[in-house]
Structure formats: structure tokens, C-alpha cells
Image 1 (cartoon, rainbow, N blue to C red):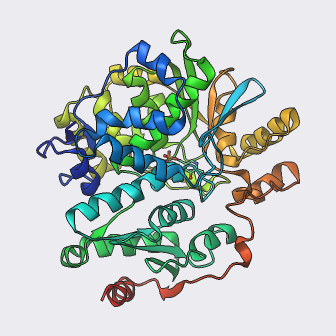
Image 2 (cartoon, rainbow, N blue to C red):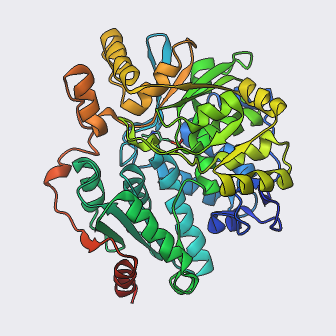
Image 3 (tube, rainbow, N blue to C red):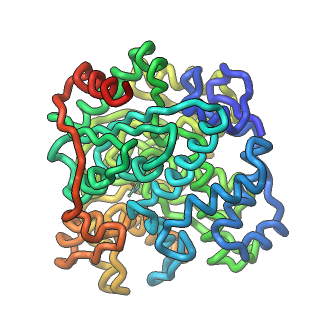
Length: 459
Ligand SMILES: *Cc1c(COP(=O)(O)O)cnc(C)c1O
């Protein structure tokens, strides 16, 4: 399989090259040149597979010849070995809906599914090339810990994660700072999340520094993350349909960066019998506004009860845009230029209609989020985390749909308590975490201070 850029200005590259490149060098996002088509008879057979065997089948055409089947199988096996549920991503029925639980990984949020695999994949590719990688990122909470757990203890990889001191939840902070592996470097900066992002940007913009120290990012734009996330759409469909290919199923997805739901979109394009993709956002609703109006317009970010979706620029949106404009890279380029210049882009009326056929887009308020946690608990004693509650609320008009549960409720117990006056019980991944020893460097929110620290560690 070859990979191209949404902006059309790179030569086709292999899977391994796409993983190492991350963001395309022309500023676009990487995508497979063609989408493999899955026959109905294959779908039926896949419905009986366990998660790891299914992942192997789905990933094989995308990986191409860059990994042997045995290497790929071993990588998948290892990436999900430390999940606490034997099914990896179990599906349970809750009232009129199904819940696809994606939070049984080491940090109790769905990002583990992609980042456990990406960490192992990086390790294998680096061992092959003899290169090293130094990952630098800023986090407002969830992504940082999932990234740290993805690469902890790995040879050839160092990871530096900046978080705003005292501005992430105690659990989120401990999930990062209790990881004591020598290759993990937590930095609490005296400043805000925006300061952290600005510092990371500064380091990446210093091209000499970037090259000398082999800097890499760990954001949601890496193709390998999207690939891993496709697997559970097939898995959940198999559980609910029992392999009956005439059974179309809708998926409700709480969305921020358009990463998770884009994986669902691709699964659909591969031939998965999807009825509707329900795109659910919190008050930060740039994506629902886009589906409604065809205009993608950046506004300010508002903090909500579902902080992992408090996003305005959805980093995977450009991938969908590429398909929406019929894979015309010139048009994508023009639109993205418009967005950079004016803070907004607009697609044609026809394209707007097409996106409305593909997605049901629903914005869920803070009050509705709490109400949904209450309603689901009252109905079935199942506790939804606030992100999942947003998906569930959006799915109310679609009985029988599968709601993606993106975090364990115990990670967001403040919201749970507010809704139903009790706390969710911590899963084993979070138990005792507040009492464990920690390691973290506190630094001023200053790019050169952080740069010096990174140099000192890597010296
Ligand atoms: C990251 C995250 C999301 C949003 O996923 P995207 O791929 O960015 O759309 C939703 N819920 C939780 C708990 C998350 O951590």
C-alpha cells in the first residue's frame, strides 16, 4: 500500500515511511492511496474473530510488505496484552443502545488503543533503521498519559510531556508523573496549556534543534493511530450483527479532533454496513456547525465537563475534507489556505448535502450531558463518563446504535458526582495512583528554559 498527502505535493510513500513522517512534509495529512474493499463473505467471517485476529486482518492490506504477517501479529498481540478486559473492547447492551467500551487500557481512555500500538510500532521501525526519536508534546490531560504509557521503557525513544502545573486533575497529573521509567520526562510548567503548546511549537520551529535532536510529535495526525481505531468499529459491528451483513448499524462518537469518527468513516468506506455516523460534540461545536452549514469556522475554546473534546481546530478534519471534495488535492490546498488566512473555509452546497447524508451532527450542552449521566444511571445503573454521555445523548434518536465509550467514568468523578452524587469506582489502572512516588521537573513557561532542559537530558 502506498500513501499520499491530502495536499498532493509528496511522492507516494510506504506505510513505514508514513508512520515515521507523521505530518506530510507538504503540510497535509497522509492517507492510503486506495481504500481496500471488504467483501460481505469476509465481513461474515470476521464477525467471529477475536480483537487481535481481527486487527491483523484489517491492518494487513494497509501495512503492505513493510512488516511480515508474523511481525504484525506479534506487534498487535503485545500492544493489547496489558488491557484488563479479555475482549479488549467489549460491547454491552445498555437500555436501547450498545456501549463499546474503549477504556480498558493502561490509562483508562480510548487513546490507549492507538498509542499502545503506535509506541510498539515506533520501537520496531527505529530498531530497523538504527535511529532514535525524541517525542515532545504538550497536554491538557489525557493524551499525555496515553502517550507516556505507549512508549515507557522503550529503547531509542525519549518522551518529554509538558503539562500546566496545577491545572490538570490530580488523577491526570499522577497518571503521568508516577511513570518512573528513565525515558519518561514529565515537565510541569509554571503557566497554562497554551504556554505549553507555544513552547512545543517553538522547539519544533527551531529546525536545527529539531534535526539535531530527532524531535517527533505524538498527536492524533499519525496514520497508524487512525488505522488502529478502525478495528473496533468492525469488532462492534460483528458483535451486534452476529455477522448478518444485511444488518446496518449506527455509531455515536463523541468527537474533538475528528480522529475517532474518521476511523469509523473509513471503516464504512471499506464496506462495513454502517447506517449513520452520529457525530457528537460538546459546546465546542465547530464540527456540528460544519455539517449543518458547510462552513468550517474557528471560534474560541470553552472549557466543559468533557475536556478532551474542548478543541476548535480538529486535526483530522482535513482527511475527511479530502474525500468530501472527491480526492482533489488542489481543492484541499485552496480550502486549507483559506482557513489559515481567514479562520474559515466553506464547501459547496452539494458537498454540504453529501456530508449531511454521511453524518448526523449533534451538539450536547453541559446540562444535557449531566442529564444523560443521570438518565442512563437511573435506567440501568451504568455510569457514563461525560464524553461518552455526549455520544449517548446524541444517539437517543437512534435506538440500536453503538455508542463509543471513550473514557472510564472514574477519570471524571467530579462530573459524575455532580450528576448522580456518587463516585465511579476506580479501575485497577487508577487504583492507588495518588499514593505512588512521582518524578516531575518544574520549569518556567519559557522556551529556552525547556530547550536547555531537553538538551541536558539528551546530552
Ligand atoms: C481524545 C478524546 C476524545 C475525542 O477523540 P477525537 O479522536 O479527538 O475526536 C473523546 N473522549 C475522550 C475521553 C478523549 O480522550
